[in-house]
Length: 308
Image (cartoon, rainbow, N blue to C red):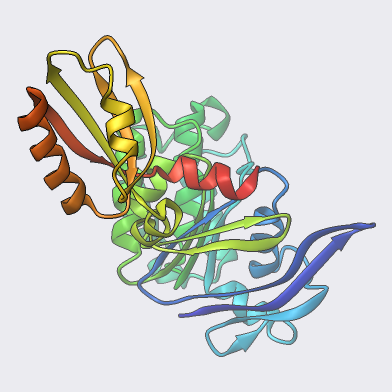
């Protein structure tokens, strides 16, 4: 079930939280929805899930619009909010039973859905405890279970791995990736390695507007512009390395990363041409190549460059 955000805006007083925002997420896609605090991520997710009204524009989930089909849309969405509000006095099993019935799961299927969610979210040992007795990580698992209890076609997950230990994070990432094969998933997180490990596509917003949209690989390619190459050399008198590199037409900025171990990083337009020049120069000057490897722009670099 596709989600289409079409020219949506939202203001709080004089501050515009979201400004004419448009994007689409397709079935079978996990979208990483990124941005700094205050960028408009949570506002957008609340509008998609009908927790907040759309001020202008439209949001369509499948064939329905939030402007006139809000109750129908809510049946098809599972939502894990950032703060994960739970009824802490209720045992896990009772809470999931309550959530299933509120979400319209037929009575004959409630027990099976609870059993499935307890297994999928790793709650078997904790299922009879009160939610208030659980650790933060297990509370987060309960939140995920309630978001999925009615088997929705669309999942909106705001910081789903908050409070989980490294083993739990790996399990939940795998779960989200598996769910993304058949559902539409929008995942908001500040953990950038999680985005690369889980998401098919990345959307970055800043001050309520889209500043980047694409796969991790495509965003890195766009951001890098030129190729960065890291070179470690050995040999006699390496004092002229940087000056030599800069004299080649295909080479841009040169940085000495570690003088003690003779490591440089340089920006090049043509890696093959640079490698040929380097090989010839080493032979002529008595240098030798210890290491030559590409340096990839990180997702963190891209995020900072677009949102600072």
